[in-house]
Image 1 (cartoon, helix red, strand yellow):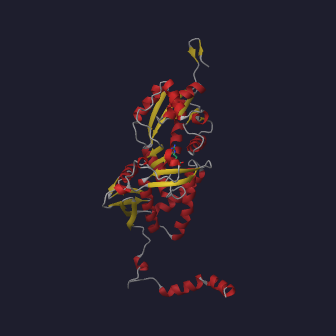
Image 2 (tube, rainbow, N blue to C red):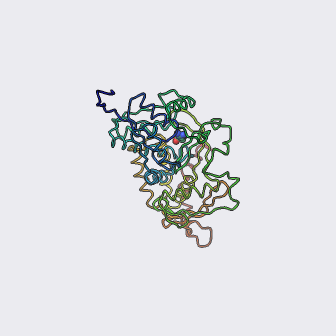
Image 3 (tube, protein in one colour):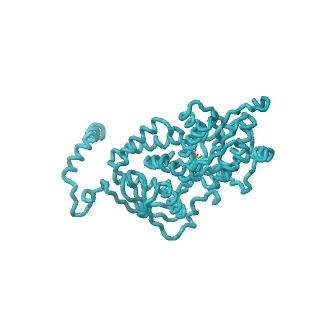
Length: 406
Ligand code: ARG
């Protein structure tokens, strides 16, 4: 490698999933020094906030040969969040999978960048302890089996201090803003907050852990009512105002967050065997899943709903495990999409000081029949038929009781 006369041998290239943070910034230099590669930095906007143009520039300043910023917010909402919402996907019944869902999309964009620039390597900034390394790598290999993956943060032995030293030695700008005491990953579907004091599962999360939700005690003294309209399982309007899914999620994040709804505190089973304490903020995700479930209660038959619960758990697990680009997800999507044809209607929610409750529902596909449900005089339910139903339904237990109960 290196110079032959004045003709420079072309170097191999690596695409790096770049966030602008300390680790991936250090990774640019580290990949050049340790692998002698040209680095192509790719920043993906999934709604994490921050100045992404500045991040793109920063990669060039550090020494990337090329830097891209891909606005993937709309694709994230429509291609990843919408299917997850139709599946009411909650990992371990609590976590709406914001971080997990973004990884296959970022990995896909990285692979596209590699293919577009002739890079044969792809790199990410994850350590060896988390789920994200698995999601990135499983996805990239599924989409391009020939890619070689490098995980600098799994190879180097920097501490935070030595990484800062390395950065200073190589003139890598470190953001002057005070570093959060937590490890954070954020996108439009929610925010994951880890590390620092949160590693003690007995300690209540300090106020500064939260940025998307107000403290419920500080929330308005009057409730906020909000109406969410769905079409085939996807929300299409808030309070009668139609909007695209991305804008709708942003709006619901704001409404629910300002009422202090959307905080999650859980101990979670990572794929790599570790239990970790996780704090999440997911105001829109929790609100929309609650509303969506409620509409399914109105429109799906009992057997279908009960069967779908099992599918939902499987779906959440496969997102968590990084198996998005696989045949199980595609097959489950086929089933779920079939179920959603009738999931049309409007759910009315009441948000108040950290709580969210369904207080009304209506649907053109409602299976709720008041004349069957009522206890008033216009009841159409056959009480006579119920007598025979009970007799037959209870027959096996009656037989058992006759034999064994004294
Ligand atoms: N435990 C969550 C998950 O596995 C959140 C991970 C947060 N990632 C991060 N790099 N801080 O999806």
